[in-house]
Image (spheres, one colour):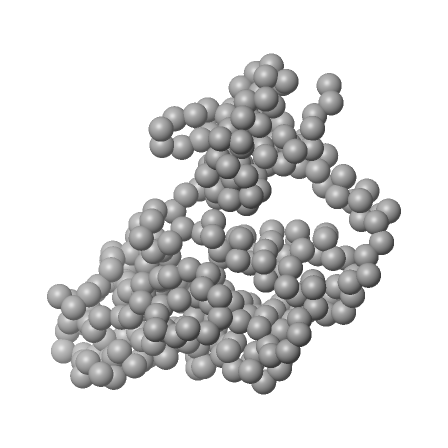
Length: 298
């Protein structure tokens, strides 16, 4: 039984993105074309690979097994192509990305790029406390995803977001004392946004917890130690959003934008930028609910 690589890629894309619409965007096809490819694949296999409901898609038990083998086949084909296809692209690309940009999808994206350009060295900085725009301007980075105000026009807009204040649902506000906050150290862009809003509000506050990564900040908030700033789409079930009715100042909308250093880019740098733009289009926005990034069996 021979399976067409295009059908395998469609199936893997549906599983990785959680639906036909986002898979179609990744593959640059129409949704109906992806649906047709999945039907052809299931007809060839002779059994269903996906449970379909109006709310979600779920892998069947056969679908779980098929996915594992499909990924292995596609990876082997990519390895065979790399082995016998010479690539003239070489050099290095320095990329900076905020930790809260696309989460666990970033390593997958970089893995796809590394397989396509095996001779290109990637140097990736992931942090919430780096001034990535300043590093691009100084020539220390070739590409970066920067957080910027909604009115700024530089760069390619990857997605819009709304920042909010959040605490754990077990948080107890201190009586007759300043309000504790958890931030990353300067020059974190989120810290700057939060501090500017707090300074203009006149409320009594202090930094009660500092961490250089999102995991540490979320742990502090979950433990009820402090309030912190998050993008709206990062809010988790155990969090409570605070607003002006709780005495906190409003936070601005912002954008994640892709920026690059001045001058001509290598073709592989432009390709990495294209992959980032495509991946960002699949990420849930502040106004939409998140979708499961990976299907599991029912």
